[in-house]
Image (cartoon, rainbow, N blue to C red; front, side, top):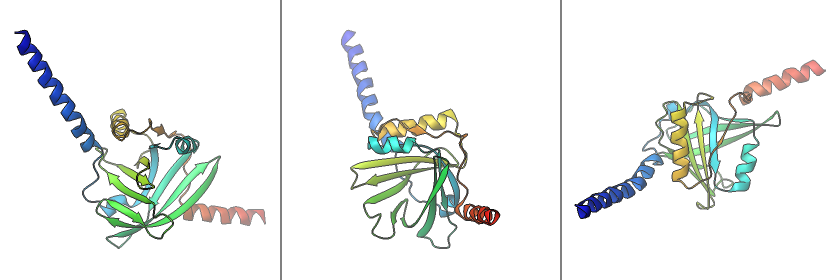
Length: 198
C-alpha cells in the first residue's frame, strides 16, 4: 500500500513539474499574427519590468507613459510616438517600424540592436510588448492598455508572465498621474502658450 501511495505521489509530482514550463511557454508566447487595426491609437503604460536593474530604477521614476500608433494603409509598416511624463514634463520620440507576423524591427540602424514582439494576453484591451536588447542580454516587458487601471486578475497574469521570463517584479504606474497629451495637441498648446506670452 505504501509503495502504491509513493508511486502515485511521484507521478503527480512529475506531471506538475512537466506542466509548469508548458504553462510559462503558453503565458509568454508571441502572438501568431498582429492586427494593425487593433494596434492603432493611444495606449497607456500600466506596468513594466526590465531585466537590467539600473534601467528598472530609472523606469520607476517616470510619472506616466503612452504609445500612440498612427493609422496606416501599409500591411507591414507603421509608426508610433512614445510620450513620457517625467518631473511634470513630457518628452516625445517617434519611430518607424516594420512588422513581420507579431514581431517588428525598427527602421534605420539606430535601433538595430533591438528586437521586439507582441505577446499573448487574455486582457481584451491590452497590448504586451516584449523587447530584447543587445542580442537578448537585456529584456524589457511592457503592459499597455486602453484603460489606466486593470483588474486584479489581469495584473496577476502579467506578474506571472514576468516571473516566467525570470525578470524582476514589475513596476506599476500610478493611474492618477496625468498622461502626456498627444504630440500634435501638445504642439498646439505650446503655440497658444507662446502667443499668450507675447
